Image (cartoon, rainbow, N blue to C red; front, side, top):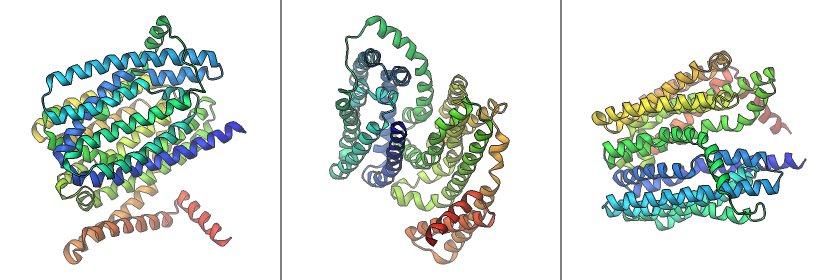
Length: 487
């Protein structure tokens, strides 16, 4: 009974945090975009992408491996204390080495005062990695502590940004608030750690052994980090701050929808892994059908809606100075479909079936090809070239995922659920297209009204189409609401 309660609490707090994580950029981005121009946003984004590589090395594979081995020894206080101490000290030593290299590299070769100030504030990210015990809490499935501290720090960070970030000269303040908030969230966690585990004298041989065992977990982190930040780094090197800023805002914009859609697969990962391991094929296929239907129901209207609302929403959301983000969003709108689909395939097939090695190779190959293409395209088309390379990488990765999973993954069932959502999306698109045509030639409404009406038409037309086509999930939701109203 206690375990069930603990699981429910974990789910509740994780849900609250995920909602907050989606809402935060919706609140802060319009404000920050009107204070900092694309040059400053580009400078910050480029430097942050560089710092990410240093934090990657500092973290190594300790967190993922630490989570696994702590989980295996969670009921043995002495063993988990010994393991925790050796991993924690190993990570701290590596982080100190990385921090020294970081300081020597940038403060020797860079002379730009703003960049040096930003890099100094961002050094806190490496310090945070050094003291971060998150692998212990994940290993003992104490997600409540993680979620609570993340919720508190996110709210605090949000408040501090609105209080202290006022002018374009406050970029370093903005950077410090974010990095200090990240540090604080980890520092708070240390207090609740004292009663759960003891810090014992580490063994050099144990530290060496655990570091070697952590190495295989480092490779997937490298591929994922390159995939996430590689294009931003390239644009900073081969383009300029303006283009880097435009691309950063585009990825921030599309990432909100990608995060919303991808959260579906994160929720069902453990359940699908269990059904696959226990070979409950009938129940697995039933769940797969439900998840597939939910994915298409959300992703297709999000993709189509973004294409229709993009021209009005981007300048309204970011400000008129970011009008050049509009063509980038048109190019990268496909990432809403393909990036979220890649996450879904990963959590439905590759992870439950222990195909992590294959998954890592596919991500690495697609990223290397995409980055190579980006170098060429950035030279000719700047941010647009980077956007093209990004969507190309996502599409290529999807194709490779399909090829290497088609023998075991039920793609026929997955694609079977697309029919009603795609027909409903077409109906929605016709309605949106008709409104935009009439507004352009006859009404000429203000941007705010256009955005509101686009959302209303989209929801109404899509919802009615789902009901007309008798989509099972929608019908079930409507019937459930009607039953509650009758009580």
